[in-house]
Amino acid sequence: MLTMARKLASFTIGYPHGIVVISDHDGSDPAPLWEDGDPSAIVSASPGTVMVKVRNAVVGPVTVDIWNGTDAPVIGQRCFDGHVRIAYGRLSVADAEDTSRIVVGAGPGPVPVQIFVEPWSFAGHVTVVLDTD
Image 1 (cartoon, one colour):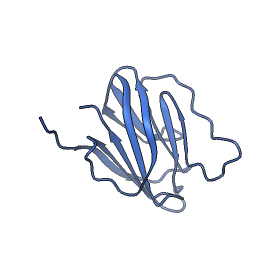
Image 2 (tube, one colour; image 1 turned 180 degrees about the vertical axis):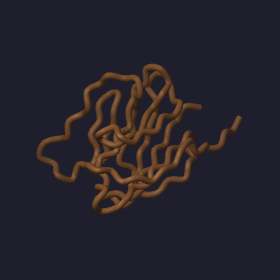
Image 3 (spheres, helix red, strand yellow; image 1 turned 45 degrees about the horizontal axis):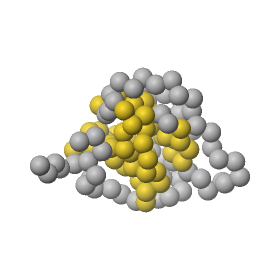
Image 4 (cartoon, helix red, strand yellow; image 1 turned 45 degrees about the vertical axis):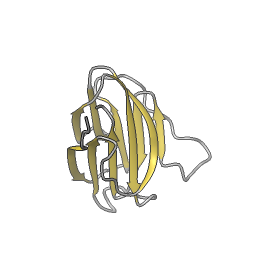
């Protein structure tokens, strides 16, 4: 049976610290550390969390689209292709201070996640694609 990609959420906000955090909503994984010595690295990941550098709120807002399904329309270049470990079936997308957060159903278990950004540096658009079907 062929399933079509479903948009789970879309929102536009300013990220005060220029970081989007995609994580297990109920998890307690420590935030991943940025790789030392590589100023061009825009992603840092641990088993339960992926952090992506984007433009900060002073520069302008960032649009985040969250899709379920590998045939989702994406914008930009892939910056992450891996899994996020989800304990109880809820994935959150938030800013670094957790003042703005959206939660979507995903998992439980290791959920395949792809993240795309446009442009690569100081992204103004992030597409998060889950594969839970």
